[in-house]
Length: 81
Picture 1 (tube, rainbow, N blue to C red):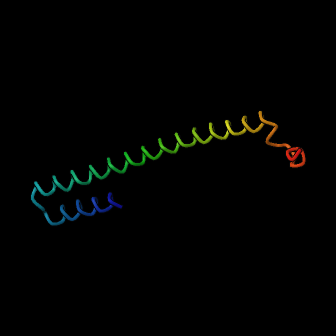
Picture 2: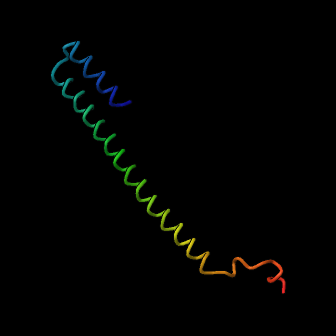
Picture 3: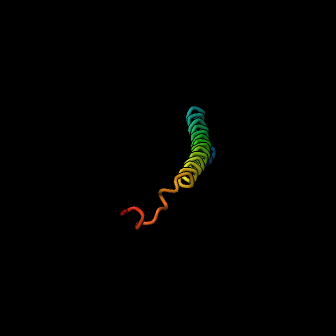
């Protein structure tokens, strides 16, 4: 969305023959928005992969704990004794 706005500003600047300083400012804005969005996407991809690895580790730990402790599966009648 922000990138589209930056593109719109650049096209308007060319159409209106804006001064070079304003055009440089608009181009800088567009580039910074592009790098912000790309950085955000890369960061989210990294966060997702880290979370995926951690969830898999937690699930494997839970499975191993559950299967290593058969006392969790004891019937209620045996517990009351």
